[in-house]
Image (cartoon, rainbow, N blue to C red):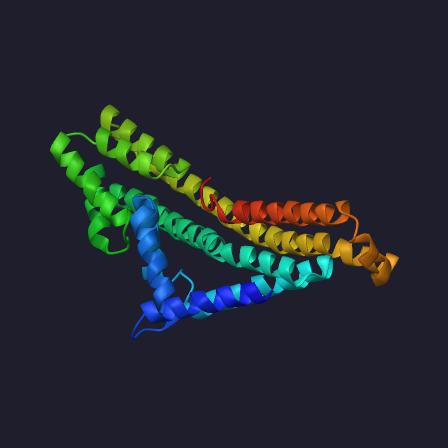
Length: 297
């Protein structure tokens, strides 16, 4: 225990000496950010920059709160499982290391929701513009100039317009956008515009109206799924807490003294470690499911 404390103090002192003029937290934050920007793929960096712009990223205070909550929960559970301070410290450190990953999952979910809302705006307004202009490229230009879109969708719409003029056809620009945003409503709408453009349909109003209704139905389904996920998430976390509490129930049944005697058997701590690892894997998998693919029908 003393060795662990001395190591922690040594790390703190070394960080403080290397970080003249700024606080130690900022030193660690800058170091992690530099590593992230160096090794993370461009798409992740793009998401991170947009998330910071939208205010999705945790503030230092929110990170500290997450560290305290997760570390405190890990400390309480593992100490009441093993009654060992060294084991508790190890699990607390591991739990704290998962805070950035959980924050990343949350950021991905919020960014995905934002992106879906932008795609909804794009599809709806392109259809409205086409009813007036009867030209797909002119519709894109109208949506571009309306000020209702934001990056990265706005940037890609501009790219579509440029590709359409460069190639003299909308095929390549549609393929580019479909690959970038693989939403069913985007593909269906683009397929309809390709059909109208190539077949030269005289009256496309009814088809576009049906397409708008389909988009509204898809959007309603996505928002319903979002609410269902939130309900599932609350129940899921409650169920996870119950799983960890089963060992406490066992202690009440056997008594604390008999439980402490059981811990002396070599296989009992192994079973307890397995219970913690399996439960944590279950919880992390659930968090990953809750936060990923939001808005993709």
